[in-house]
Length: 324
Length: 262
Image (tube, rainbow over all chains, first blue to last red; front, side, top):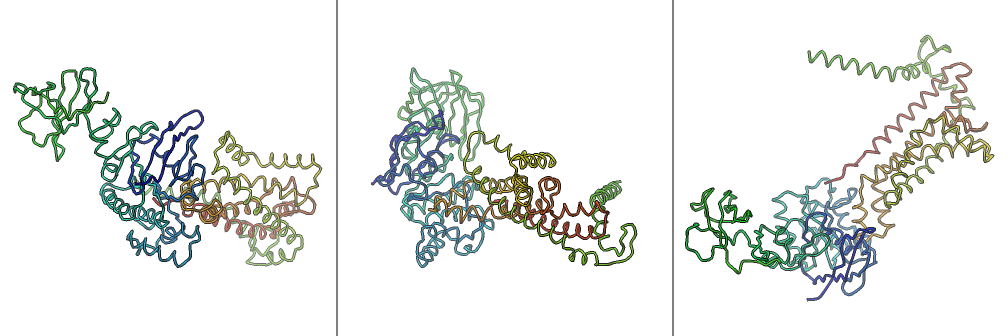
């Protein structure tokens, strides 16, 4: 594995306000890395620095070993898919897609050949004469991707590319995007606030919070071994409890309920069932435990639990994640 | 009851329209009247239009008006486009104050504008003529043109230009292939608006024109002082029609395709 992008103690501040404190990050060639965080966490600024629209206040950015920190966007060998696609409204689909090649004065014959390939690849051949306004959201999204990948960039940056689409279409395009990435072997840097999207597509996820990368790792690492309270609560649901002086997190699906009088040696807490909600695939049971904290358990069977029942709450030692 | 209300509303609307357009309609009607005296209708004629185009002084005024309007339009549109682009691209300190200063001349009474320019030109001892007329016209048209072009630019947003840059277009290529085509309806609208306002202006021109730079509105005013003749009606009719055509085109272009695809 080779490093394609290296950020070396990059920092960004606007005036006195530090938006992104200094940090370093290496991105491998061909990987799908996601910057995941709530809106306003600095992930877009981070991406704009990599693409060249913002210059870091200090630090260096390397693309394939070359310092590109102050190289303008139009001279960087990477392309971006914008949040609202930013398709040129006065050009046809074909002209939109060809824009990059025309600017770089690629020979006509090559332009034509690459256009055909990309149109075929993104299933847009029949729409090439249309204007962007005449396309659906999903089709516009595909034009935006085609317009970027026709340039054979080393790195493709995607800024919440599915944010404006409805649920079903988003699911389909997630699969499509992942396939495009696998087939082309391009490095994808993907920005989103949607954790399901990040989980299902990424090789690695960088969780961003207040301009800092809180944790970086595979989806499994992020989910099962969160390294901070923020990651533990931002990704999925979690029960945060204080045991002695430790702060621990246990996932709701790892919690089991027992009759209060059962002689189980591993009852960690006792509490009263406050609510049982049916969510389709699971039952979500809320138990108010002794220190007035609410512990949530995800159960596949409703069993005989009822509201107001006093129960024992248990989990296995290995499912505890110590956060502090 | 509802029907009654609807009819009343319709009648009221018609009255307003009549109030707005009756004077102009009468003016146009009497330009075809076969009588020297405006009061009575004697029959249809085109002779006032004929005599108008045989009148050297009218033709000279028309020539002056068109020269001033064309030069004003070209200079104003270019200056306004450059300023609007700069304001769109760069956010600088006091940007809001600056924007306010650009809007302000639209609200300043024309008579003050004319007077202040007269004072300024005489301070610098510049002789009144076509040059002062053109400078004055550019001054009062500039604000309108900037506002029209700015509206177009803010409708475009920033990500189209960024997308172009991201795809390898240099700043010049971005301007040439993306910015210019998208704002061109705004530029044309601003140009037509400027042309119309220049052609139409009386108050400011009255202060800053010289003996050899009488424009059409000034000439009409001069004719009225010697009594209203049907020739004035004919001349005014031509002016009104030209202005209506240009405003319609300007309006339709200013808002054409501003809605962006989402």
